[in-house]
Image (cartoon, rainbow, N blue to C red; front, side):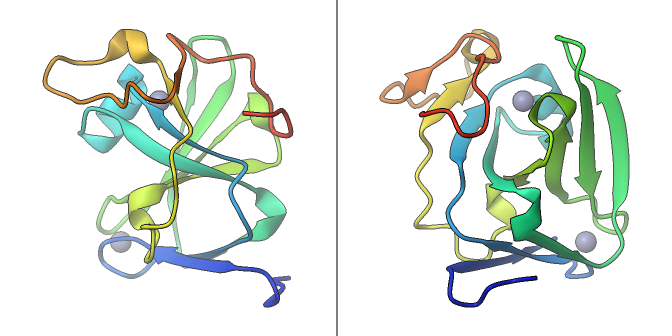
Length: 147
Ligand SMILES: [Zn+2]
Ligand SMILES: [Zn+2]
């Protein structure tokens, strides 16, 4: 159930057939320069906001692609089967959470990235925010830890 007393973020894909609501504040907002994000977005990095899955409500049909990450976790990338927009991802290492691609949120201007991960895979043609806490790979961070 969505509690309207909390801040509600609406979002969706390019064609509009997938919509979602995310409620409250994200646990963390991160730029990820890993090679999987580069493939999955076609850009130099992805920018994602992590929410608890019980604060996320999906509407519309999505497609999933599952793969195993470098450290052995199952990663599921969820996208719109019509227009291909990446919507969110889940990681078996962070059960109960979804990482929403920030560009799909209707009003994303107020979100502030806090960390950069997989900095070792930064491409020369991409920019990296050097003012943020930066990790070369996936940090041992878990939802609930301080950023
Ligand atoms: Zn779509
Ligand atoms: Zn990544």
